[in-house]
Length: 438
Ligand SMILES: Cc1ncc(COP(=O)(O)O)c(C=O)c1O
Picture 1 (cartoon, rainbow, N blue to C red):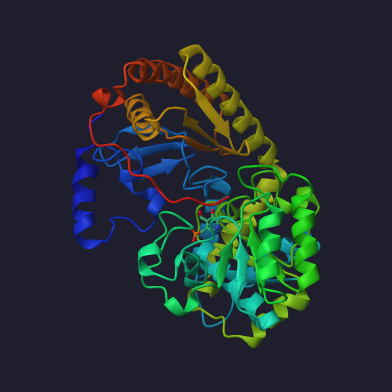
Picture 2: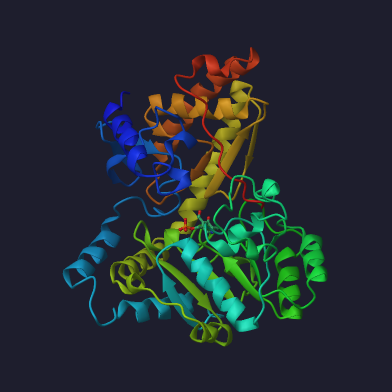
């Protein structure tokens, strides 16, 4: 499938936009250098048309996790159009802010107050600011990825410039004030002892413990309860980042399933199905501290984001979207397993079903992954080694995709046997991203 128009536009983009895109995970080099279509003309459900009018079925990230109902969902778009028609911005505030706050607190009965932002990273920065305002402390212990802001990238500042970046490979802290060194300290998921040593090294000094309640692995040995107990014991604010884990397993934050209450939870991405919206929800005793700091931005008051979120949440609940996402994710995971067995290919499969991923068990992982993307693209699929389920994924998408995946696994297995996956590659090997330290 030729996509010359897209390729030409991406070359132009690189002249004007450092890095070519606004999000690392949308860089074509991360998928298939020189061949990934990069731009879309339109998207509907899980179908995407590139600038050259090639049609693909998205069996990859579906808007990097945002399009939980599918692209251009009719119900959400109707609410957005109504919001636009009644004025997306004014000197006065949008009443949808209050309706959404009440809805979020109804879904999360432990929370009583809400602030908004429009992107995940900035919402996390707000949450950490509130925690620091609340406690009067600086250091933050964290697990996982939480965006691009200084508080987080500070984790990659070492004593020595040359050592910068070693804790979270791929996240360069250049431009982050060196004075923040030592203020963000990582621990790994399910490793309570690592959090305990951070606490021991900073007795009663942590402002917050920041983590996703669940991502790749289920919590083991009451991990979440242990983290909750530590946070309460040392007076640190427990922040659950639900930007990606939320709205996948249930209608709301995944922590509701595990029965552990944070002090603050942050929701975004899937909450508004492709429109910019993020929410910081929390216990009133903690959220009130937002008033003791300056946290304020013009476009946090526009109307489209909350209107989209309200419509998305109602539909999510009404249609039991989470059950569909789990079912689709399970079908994909078991389909990968079967296809790999038939192709005699070794795969490691993991992730929560709605956020599934696999990796090729070979020392030519990256070559094999690039080849997978290329061969699937030739068969009409946007595909990589991650699959984010959408409500718009239907049985026929799954069947067609798994049939193609099996064919492609067989081709990859043959090249791996003689050590030549690059022989079939039409371009360079894909770049690697960053590590989440989960
Ligand atoms: C857990 C988590 N936190 C924060 C972010 C950052 O969100 P955003 O890209 O909207 O700034 C992401 C994005 O992938 C995420 O998965």
